[in-house]
Length: 287
Ligand SMILES: C[S@@+](CC[C@H](N)C(=O)[O-])C[C@H]1O[C@@H](n2cnc3c(N)ncnc32)[C@H](O)[C@@H]1O
Image (tube, rainbow, N blue to C red):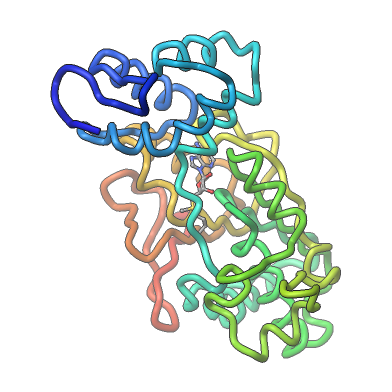
């Protein structure tokens, strides 16, 4: 593979010209908001080669044309799957779950006896929403009877294959160990051969749905807490501002927003105030 201005080899039959790369960048931005910067041709070739071979497509130009027709939704979602970064692990940014059990849930259960709704807005393979459900379990054990209504977790992602894994809730290899203590493993999972399966009482609170954050999501209803972690980084400033504005509109008054620990809001919206809690940061919807 070369990185020159003429063409870039994908394999013997496939090449990626600068024009095709630009077309692909536009397609990806339209399809899921992801901004693929200059010089990322290697990502396209390394991630799409096998999909192209599977569909016997020999150029990225053809790939984009076929995906744009919408006649093959599997091709379109295969491209999105291949180009999105799905990395996640158990109890990522652990302070967020401590804030949830130590501050947010006590406040919400003090304020309402009704339903509490939490949205995990880019849930990948499910660790984040299941961790929220585990935090709720921990809160209930520490505060029996305090949570009077139903607590519902809606978990969404653009990637159909990640959602399939998330719904299954079975984790093997590194995915079964990264971030988990022995106590958490024993309490929240059952062992299935070499793998771990999330226990039904933790799964039960979570409903998974496919959703593109750059499209409308008002139909999801209103939420008290939103986890939108480690996904905004892929979007332009305008898209981030738009997504955050639409999230602000579907948060209940005083609702909370968690972002990834390396992400910040200030440049994109003034709808939230930053709250420092228990060693971490959360954003609260302004009155
Ligand atoms: C790095 S993972 C973050 C997972 C989890 N929130 C965490 O912090 O560990 C980013 C996820 O965002 C999803 N994603 C990317 N673009 C998206 C979009 N436009 N709409 C919804 N989800 C998207 C990807 O499929 C991927 O699962």
